[in-house]
Image: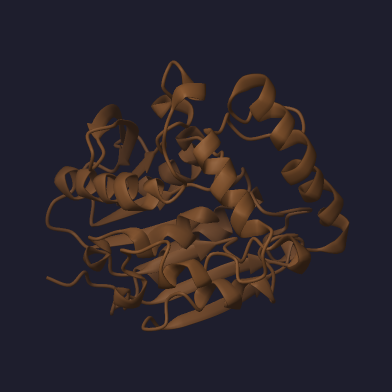
Length: 292
């Protein structure tokens, strides 16, 4: 991959908020890949994945949502935002930056966890030809693996409120292994995860405007048997928010890729190159041509 070029830069979100972005690209890319992160995962978490795809001829854009890692303001406790801002304001800007960096080639999308949830908030989602979802499923706690329930309930009712009281934001490390999270992310995320309809019912009123009904590009959702969150039950529930897209769920075991564990985040870790090739090959199938 000697011809792979990596460039870090800052670009404004739709409202001008500065976002930290990284382009990992082959010298002459034939396809552009937008990677939208899971909650609390910095763009660097996807570096190995991005380099692998660049080695196969892609231009890959990763970025930090507002309030996260390289896009974190100095005073996170004072930050005013809502969780869907990542989809409404940040993801569209990342897509525009990718198209500008790799003009004239088809654009596809890999959405990890909330990155798949928020596709329907993007006003420019029609520019994307295909969507590979990874570990995307309803966050309602009672539908998750029973062994995981005590940890997430403590996060919602114990650690989260304590961290907000002490720091003014959700402090990363320890129980919450992700990055620091703004208050506005956690409070909306908590509201959704504590009710069975998740955020589906809010699309009728509270979360308007949105573009979930306008998404028509194919979606293939990869879930893993040891993921306690995105499961055979929760993945189809989430996909209901995209009624006009061709949707399918594929289930994989860690052993399928020679891995001992995948869980909710392991799909992007070292050793998962066979999965990455599987996703990339699907994204490049013949009907994966971006609409004009």
